[in-house]
Amino acid sequence: MIDTDGLANRLIDEHERNEQFRPFAAANGIASLEDSYAVQERYVSLLKPRCGAAVGYKIGLTSQRMQTMCGIPHPIAGVVLADRLHHSGACLAIADYGRMGLEFEIAVRMASDLPIGGPAWTQESIAEHVAGVCAAIEIVDDRAADYAELDVLSLVADNSWNGGVILSTFCSDWPALDAVSGTISHNGTEIDRGYGRDALGHPFAPLAWLANALAVKGQSLKSGEIVMTGSLVTTRFPTESETYRFELEGIGAVELNVTA
Image (cartoon, rainbow, N blue to C red; front, side, top):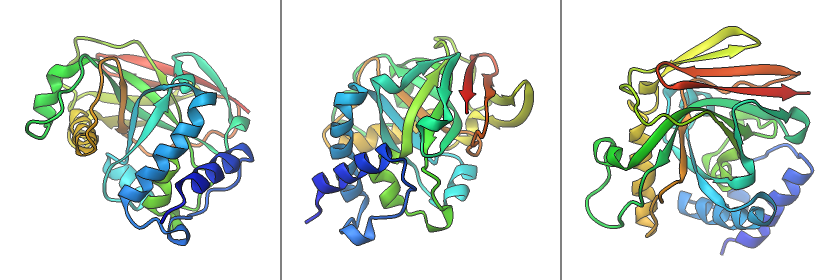
């Protein structure tokens, strides 16, 4: 039997000490994603008293570039907590994380509770339940992981590395999201670009994936929840005081100030 309490407390301790991330699944009997999400659920429950209630989810590894970077060929999910939700213009310190990473994404806000039961969700059927979309930056804390040794079971158990999100203003009338371009700028200079189609072909495809994954557990997305649909480009790792801007064509832009 997996010691979910012990592993969850171990993760709390490691994060408090900013210890380097090391794979731990195999040595602790975590043999499936179901096991990993059970540890994640317990870990998140321990985070809530200090980081607030759950306000949504992050989906990771939805683009080919991110799957290649991590060596994992499918999406993963984690939970976003209230005190880790920030707005455009936020200033965050690198020193508060084991190693801060930035991912550049399209976020959605749910308009209504999804009914449980019925046919599987698709990107088309879930669209009517979306209230708005916005440019967003996810803070990931990979704690200086060695990506050559990364295993998905340990990553998922560690809440899929979510350390927070930064949101711009939500747009309720959005263009075709698969064609939307997203431009990343560093200190005013463009450094990368991605497209909505990089997230499994369309950002609502990972949203449907998450809805179906939750339905298997008898859960569903709720009105007002925020969902990060996965980075369109590979992770950036700030090393000094810097400013990042992510602009989605026809939707809006989000900015983050990072301090050393």
